[in-house]
Image 1 (cartoon, helix red, strand yellow):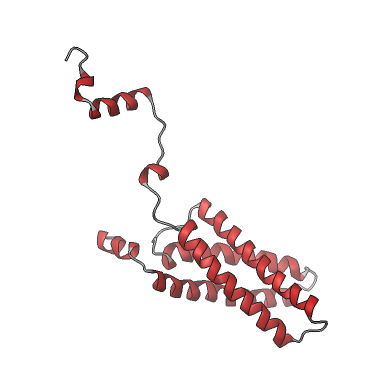
Image 2: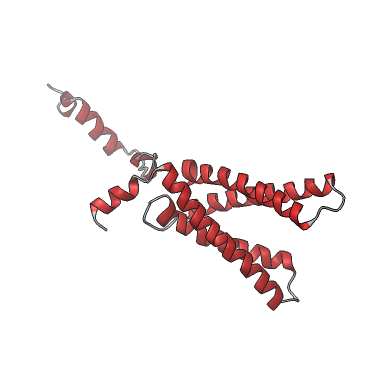
Length: 175
């Protein structure tokens, strides 16, 4: 990858990143919903909750890779830390959507399918916006300094070299 291409990837703006997030995350989400329905029909002996959990885990891994490579312009694979943080944000979004539907069922005795979908999709949209912010500002943030990502232990030799570089008289005690 050329230096120009890397610089271009590093300059992904918020609006472009959000559009990519919607396309990548939304595309994976739609594919996952079809996968859950297909697998649940194909494997009726497996509980739907387990099928949903497996597909959710796989789709979160895929979406995290897409977000690292394309959405946020990093151009490389996601790290384990990014996968874990992304999974945490996905679990939080899942909890928000489930809670919204549960609240609906507490408020309305027998909500229709349209009401459930409106509540679910509204909660999912809000959770998605919050998830985008977490992924952009925390998980895939580029503001980490090189020293924070490549921390090296401070040894006596490194400390002496730093002192000597800062104070040339430190090289020779007689000076």
